[in-house]
Structures are given as C-alpha cells and as structure tokens.
Image 1 (cartoon, rainbow, N blue to C red):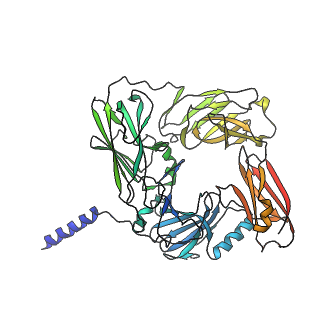
Image 2 (cartoon, rainbow, N blue to C red):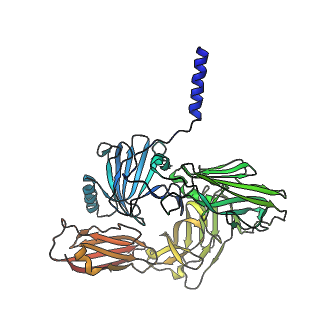
Image 3 (tube, one colour):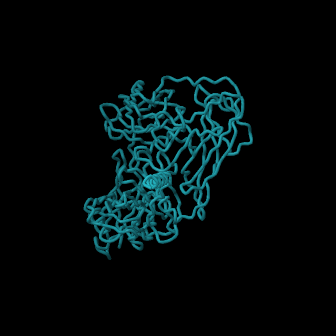
Length: 550
C-alpha cells in the first residue's frame, strides 16, 4: 500500500513537471475590449519593442487600471515617452506605462510644482512604497498621446522584478485577447558564408518570395532568414513573430523565442536581423538569449551534395497560432568564391585599434558581433577642417559607443572650439551629428557603427517659428516650431513677464514646443511679454520676443 501511494505521488509530481504552466492572469489595463497596435519584441531600429501597445479607441483620457496589487514607484515626464508611470507589483512583476496624458490625484500637482521649481519640462519623482499603494483594477493614470507617439495609445512594459528582464505581457491577458490568426511569411533570404559558400553561384545574399517559383541553388555553407509578421482579428496592424523554427531535412537547425530580454541585450538585434529579415544564424559575438542553435554550427547549413535540401520554417505567435513555410534548396556544385580582400581584419573577440593619419578608433572586445574585413579610405579638400574617414564601405553596427578621435587641420582651425562636431557622412554626402568634444586639437566622439566620419562646424543658431500666433490669446496656448539643421536643439527656455514659463514637447512627433497658459501663475486681461530661447548642441542660441494679450 505504501509503495502504491509512493508511486501515485511520483506520477502526480512528474505530471506536474510536464504540464505547461499557464501564465498568471493580470487585470487588463482597460475596461473595454483589448485591441493592440504593437506587440512584444517587434523589430525596431537598434532595439526590440519592449511591451504591448494598447489601442484606446482613438481618444485620450481613458482610465488606465492597475494589473495587480502593488505601489507606484516613480512618476516621470520625458520628451521620448511623455508622461510615464512606474509601478511595482507584489506578484513578482513591475510595469512601466508610457505616453500617458495625466497622472491622477495629488501626483499631478506635485509633478507640476516640480517642473516649475526645477524649471524643466522633464522631471521625475521617486516615491516610497507607502506613498501611493494601488489595488488590482484601480485607476492609476489617464491614457494619452504624449512623447514619441503617432496616435492615442498606452504602451505597457512588464518586467520580472527579480531579474529586471522585459517579459512578454500578452500571455497574461490571453483570456481578454481575440487572436486566432497565425503569423505569415513575406519573404525568405539565403546568404553564403564568406569564402565558404555560394548562393545562386554568387557571394551576395539573395531574397525570394516565401514560395519561390525559381529553382534555388547553393553550395557550401549557407544561412537562411525570413521576413514574417503576425496578425490579429479586428485590426489592420502587423506584429512581430514570437517563435521561429527552421528545420532542414526534418532536423531542427535554429529556433528563436521572443519571450524575454534584458536592456543590455537590446542592440544584439543588429546581429540577428538584416533589415526586416530575421537570420537563422547566430553570429559568434551575439549573446541574445532568445536565439538557439541546434549544434556548434550556429545555424549554418552545409550544402555538399547535389540533391534537394528541404527547408521548413514554422512560425508561431504567443497564443499558439502557427503556420509553416516550405521551400527547397538544390545543391549544385560550383567553385566557392574567395572572400573579398580588405585592408585589415577587425576580430570580434579582440580589442581592435585603427589608426589613419589624424584619426584613431578603438573598438574594445565585445563591440563586434563577427569578424569584419575593413575597407578603409580617407580624403580631404582645401576647405575641410579635417579629413573624411571611411572606416568601412558599409555601416557595421557596434554594440556600444566606441571612441573615435579626429584631429583638426591646424591651418583651418577656428578659435571657438565649441562649434566643432563629429559628423557621420551618408553615401549622398549628407552630414548627421554624432556629437563629440574638443580636446587638444582633436574631436573625440563615441560612435555606434563603422561608417564614414568627419569634423564639421556649426555656427548657425536654431530657427524659431511661431505657430498660429494670432490664436494664442483665444486658445490659451503658445506653440513654436524650432528647427536646427546641424547639431539639433539641445535646450530651450521660455519666460512670460520675466518669470519662468513651462514649455515642453507634449508630442515629440509633432515637433512643437508648447506652453499652456496657467491662470494661477500670471494675470489675465492685459499685455504680456514673452521671451523664448532655443540653443543647439554647439551653443548657438536664437531668441524670439513678442508681446501678446491674454
């Protein structure tokens, strides 16, 4: 009897281990049906989308509700995320709510007072756990369209408190989401390993429709990639794909599962993706935990027989909907082209130093994802204050900022060193500021990619343009459009009747700097004097002054 009971308990224990654990359900942030405009892990420029974007039925000021019991840890106002709320929950998770329109209760007053006392639109207020406790379902903020936002919505980031990892919130709202649509592929990609493989007889990556009609041929070591998106009922948006599995001839080669990542992993997206394509190969310097290769080949596939190789991609979303894409690659023997020649080789697992006349670049170990055979060049013209340096003939991302030093040509150097900046040079010659500081005849900057760089001069102040000047008194709202063509606007300040006026960027996409009149802070029914100053990153300032009636 004792043995039977022991076996029964053992079976129950093993069954529990094998049974998938259902995600703990959280209270939805809204009391209306959930519809999403963005999901977790979508591919973005240099980063993954960190959470869910909830549609708010085209309006702002929809009550946002707490997902569990906890407390508000921090209130913030930023240019990028607008009004932001950080909440710690007692269930092991924490959350950040972005693009809000307003905080609720006493917090709104405290934030406004902090903005005026610090004379800054961007502020933050950190709170103790006892100050603002919250209960599941309680209204904690109002939804909005602030910060870098293209329309009314709520962005929700969910974190695992113990690790700080971003976690996919969608499984926690599974019962509230209507989604029975599987991901779909828009294209596939094949690319050879340089010097060790070929695709369609060449050395370049090739892109094809998901069901190619032409015969695909390859030889040697090749990689594959896929462009795919997920979809949901009732919305026209497309979303990122949760799980991608590549099998060749029935054997799994590669798997990606977009379920968590840390802030430190964000830029590894540049090692995984090629434009909109997700590669099924893991570069040696890529430490992204969501990528898994079946063996030491890291996802590379060896085509060494003249026969068909059967590739199958299985695409799944976070709620289990899935689809498959099948295509065949025919092995066709051919000479393997040599890898392109280069000036020197930067190795991914070493510290690399590049020195050219008047220039030095240091790339520490861990900044590259794979070896890079550099193709460098430099040139100048009679009016340049420094040489223009091509570090490589195409952009190669770096995992973090790496120090670049460019010396000035002393014969052309100006006295005011604050007007110099390091600029990235596009193929069409367009300059983009990457900042930098003057240091003993050199400009020192930290760059995020191998490309082409030079030193430029900015002596032109920003341009301040009033928007709808005639309607200020009627609307109770001052608006400016402020533009700077070189280094960008770094700061701004407004004063009304000599006192600080709260100007800010409620919506970064519009580009407008706005002040809403506060009757508590100045007298209505008379003329007022307005002074507005904007300064760029090289210290050039512009001032706009006028009188208005309110």
